[in-house]
Image (cartoon, rainbow, N blue to C red):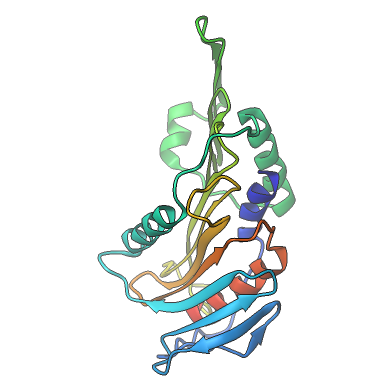
Length: 258
């Protein structure tokens, strides 16, 4: 579980250099990118497939936006979770451990947390920490609201919000769902008031998924109005995929223009 949470935090650590964005009509799919090797490419230049050294398959695609970018990506998330299947009950980290790991990851990655004004108003600028124990079940219910950090934990389950990162850990399994969505400026528009671009990360991973996969997710980047560039990652291996992660982001952001 700790690896998954640290992986999510690292999603914010890579920053693109500032030069004019040149969004091409076709994807740039080099033969290799770090630990990734291209195994196929569509003739129309709209998709290509890579294989990682640990066996993970990465499909890079230029995806049109239907409605809006958030709705488009939500549909993809639902498809990946269906493909992964439901987690099988097993032992897992506690909510307190999940919260501690996220706090460490936030400090290590120096996340520039987005503060929700509505939350700030609700807590009137002061931290709000509530904790109580259910007298019948003995379970502890904890809620913490701080600028950029929101934790709701019940027993072994945790619902953690760290700025733009949302993590949901289920105490009945070793499975976690991690989501990150950020409004960003397109490359070369550092001085623009408008953030026309997006970066998004989704991970659905764990040892207990019933669909045969251990790791499913995507990395997305591009203008909100589309098309956005999405790399869908599928793996049946019980691996951290550390070498793969930055390589996937490099491919996506190079083509997405953020």
